[in-house]
Length: 130
Figure 1 (cartoon, helix red, strand yellow):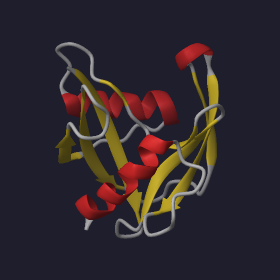
Figure 2: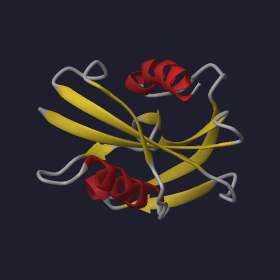
Figure 3: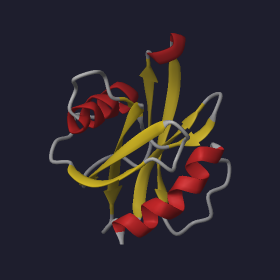
């Protein structure tokens, strides 16, 4: 089974979650494949750095689900952050390179313009962080 790590970074008492605009695939949360033998928490920290440029520690396990994408287990870790910018762009080298535009998404807002997988996922994230 393919395993994905999802580092959820929130701010303002978990009311906003870090997200980005993928130039080809809509709005998304950071996530990536957990490599063979790699601890899921380490994968979450690595993926956050690769996709956003952020080096954060102190992630706590939040949830795991095999109901997001068939044949995959997604493992979620949470970090409440302060002092990060409102918006920034980061060049991610994955898939030939893309510029990801990061922003804060209010968790109670309707997810518009999101990749369909993440649109469905945001309601679960809201419950897990409550």
